[in-house]
Image 1 (spheres, rainbow, N blue to C red):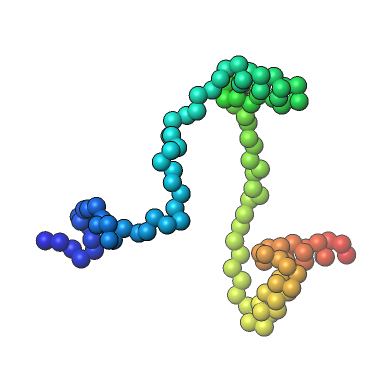
Image 2 (image 1 turned 60 degrees about the horizontal axis):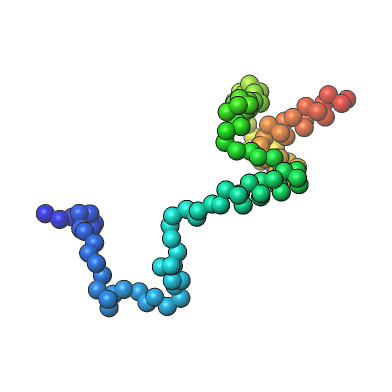
Length: 120
């Protein structure tokens, strides 16, 4: 019994009439997928030229010798949540005030109010 969603069906080869036209496609048949062979003499010469110009090798081996890179995360300030229920007119004014001042969060508007009061 088969579902109508197409699961379990195996895609077979398309008939030439159903295949899309190959116009506009690149012919990549001559490109090999194997890595290019490197000439050690040319590679060493390139490294020496780079060293003369001030480039530093940052190969994978040096990271292990130097030790792991310590990344520090800034500790976030403790947070709290305030749910305010009040007159619609006042809360609408506060929302409009926050939007006009470009605050992305209401706590930023409250911080601005606190700064205004602390300056007095």
